[in-house]
Amino acid sequence: MDTQLSEQLFTKYSHLVYQQCGINLHDGKKALLQARLNKRLRLTGFRSYKDYYDFITQSENAEEMVHFLDAISTNLTYFFRESQHFDLLQQSLLEPLLEEKRRLGNRRIRIWSAACSTGEEAYTLAMCVLPGLGDLKQWDFRILATDISTRVLEVCARGVYSAEKLEKVPANLRRLYFHAHPSGDHEVAPLLKEVVTVRYLNLQTPFPFKGLFDFIFCRNVMIYFDKPTQEVLINKISQFLAPGGCLFIGHSESLTGLKHSLTYLKPAVYRK
Ligand SMILES: C[S@@+](CC[C@H](N)C(=O)[O-])C[C@H]1O[C@@H](n2cnc3c(N)ncnc32)[C@H](O)[C@@H]1O
Figure (cartoon, rainbow, N blue to C red):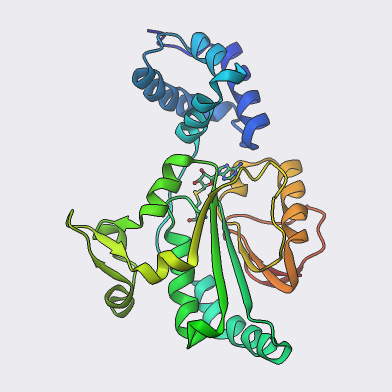
């Protein structure tokens, strides 16, 4: 089994990752890539980094490419992460949007959690919006949750979380929107699953959407992309924001230096 990833192979892998999903693995990320590759090599039985590279770059092995990208992506997330965003949504943005929609007779509300990881962001959004809607039958409300990692999407679709993961969920919402799962963990209520649609989507590919989104959460993923990739992504995303709709990015991310047509609203929130 290889023990050292050569500079030359590291460069090849980082180009591959950049080209496949936009993630920028600079020199400081070599140890991280190697650790994650080791895991994948152990699981698949490959003994050399080069053989594995040659394997995943053959088109007939596209499935292993998905697992490779799964292995190298960082999936940290939690319920109510960067909670200012959810406060803003609930306290300032949702009601005016609903009023405007009622006035126009438009019952459609769409939110997109782009790069949703294991789903905590999408379910947090559902818990924040549902109480404001009153009678759900009056609305056509959906949250789209997408990610490039099929592994995290399975967790998202299953909607089962440990007690530890629920720590940031207020007790009243825990009672309302979770129930005990036979495993001893907690499962999101059917209502939350009903409004959340889980799909695979690589943000580097064209978006397949027909309609526009009222809110787009694209948080803590751009940080892995370089500036040109971020700029292309932000402009692609903007095209799918409804007029007046808002884009939320991570608080450690920034649109500074990127050409875009959105207006700053609050820290890490931009309006079309
Ligand atoms: C750190 S998580 C962010 C989760 C959540 N948005 C949050 O802020 O807590 C980053 C996610 O981005 C996903 N990701 C990375 N590159 C992607 C791409 N090109 N397309 C879609 N998702 C991607 C990863 O799989 C990972 O689940």
